[in-house]
Image 1 (cartoon, helix red, strand yellow):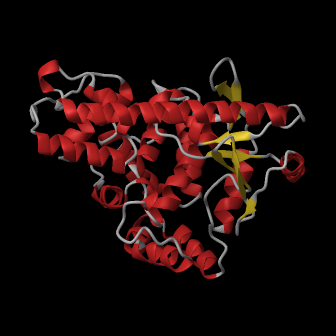
Image 2 (tube, helix red, strand yellow; image 1 turned 45 degrees about the vertical axis):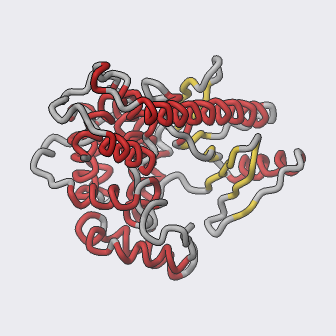
Length: 352
């Protein structure tokens, strides 16, 4: 079943005709299963794009297609609403000479062939220094916007109906030595600006730091509550969009210094083999012998950020700790030093 799913996912993600139609036509039951998988992994819009490139006789039943189109329209409307909210928020801060960095979310959506088909979530921002971060809070207070502060000192609030988070750290690394090195490394690069919509541009991290933040974000969730395919599609699209702007040898050396080479070999093998990123767009050469089953098992079980894993309705500190404990064998093989520090922070209640 997942073979067919990945055929349609790759077609939609890269805007190319499905490469293997041997399993088609599909019966009603299999089409319904594909729809449920796409929703679980929050890639409904991307898979729909792949479906539109099927020959007419291989399309889903009409009643399912109506449901799929309705879901895609919801995704497109949410993207439009989120983009408008982000535009207004960036304008508000820029009027006060603040230029927040847009992390993940709508910034990585801009790297898709059809940004409106990527399912969006929160707006994530980062300010370069504490003074700017404090000034941003003062602006929010002046506008009468209440916010909530979290254990990691990040804040969240509702803006134009959208959840916004101001993050205090750029990289999801908890081993002090790794985090210090990554932050020092990122500061060497100048930020870049990419289009949002309607001639608006947003400030994002430079290419190499951008990829590092996506990578470590995926790792944190993989080691904990779980990860879905949308985030791996994000990484693949980022590599494609930023091709030629990233020094592959520096990327390999950086992840080696961070102690994450095994994790990266697994992650990049997955986005090449299953997501369809051409191997030359990412930094590793020898990937064909790497078994991606351990990562695929977590993705298949957990879905988007672990929301579909068994018992995911509970997000208590104990539940979070148990989720990380469940991944101990995976962590021991792919990112053990990082995992140890995550567990230490969990015991002190400092991990969001």
